[in-house]
Image 1: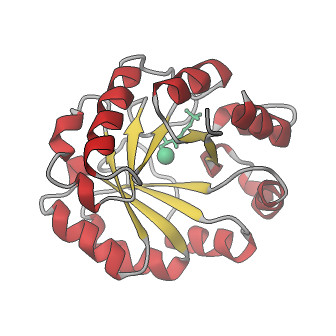
Image 2: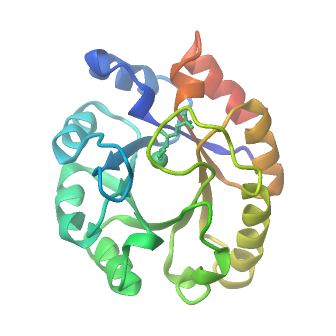
Length: 217
Ligand code: DX5
Ligand code: ZN
């Protein structure tokens, strides 16, 4: 089995010490740095926006994987490209003209990814999957770190894998929420390529070792 890519979510990092946390990730086996942008409207929490992403990007040596949990993401595509996002994820549930949004993300030089909430079925991506670089499946309801993994996600990963194999084999499957060694292993077996992990990495005694173990388990 190929090794998964690991995307630690800085939502669970020490914000008083963010520069050092990013340095720590630079020296780890992390493949991406996952930035959770929340607006208090689409999700019941507010995190951070472009200025923080821009500062993270100044220190980061890994590509920024920016997850937008905001309404009207189209308004901010260019701003996040300028802030340094390499990958930009928008929620299916927030986009009325998803094809246009995905095209705009690519036009701004970023990889395009679409996220599905736990209740949103995979088949809704059938007509857009060939345009995508990645699909992000939420395995918790978005808004907070440290929540319990929703097991129905395994089924969705398998359905998505099938859709991807038939239409766009290079498209990655990323899973976000409640990832630990056990859920991570089962997600990889189901077909996931990228694991987001927040509290499991930053809450551990040795985050670099946890990233290593997640990658190699
Ligand atoms: C949740 C965020 C996640 C979150 C994951 O809305 O999108 O990226 O940081 O946190 P854990 O890994 O603690 O579930
Ligand atoms: Zn996220």
